[in-house]
Amino acid sequence: GVIMAEFCEGAIALLVQSWQELWPLAAEDKTGLRVMLQVLDSLRLLFAVLPSLRGGGVVRWRALERQAGAACRVLMASFPMEPEDCLPASQFDLRRSNSVMLEIVTAGLALGCAG
Image (cartoon, rainbow, N blue to C red; front, side, top):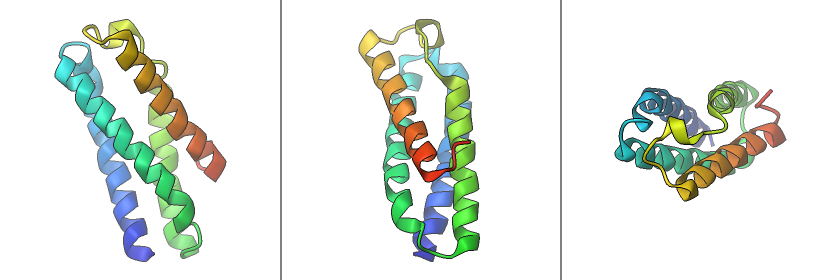
């Protein structure tokens, strides 16, 4: 439990940092968008695991909750992704990225950490 919570906390922080670094590049490079979609998929998987970690220690959960909340705020600031944000993106890629962002933020709201 504790090890998994620490892993998720660190992974979320790293993925959010990657998202913030990739955001300016996505408008210039289709590879950047593909990596951003992978970051979103990874965050979605981590957010799916979070409910199972809620039963652990309160201090660890609060730290994880803060990190998840920060991730949600970063994604909400990026939403919705528009064609000018990712010039070479297809409409499918844009719909997919916006859909996954909503899925992650919704999961954060359900956990009470996306406020």
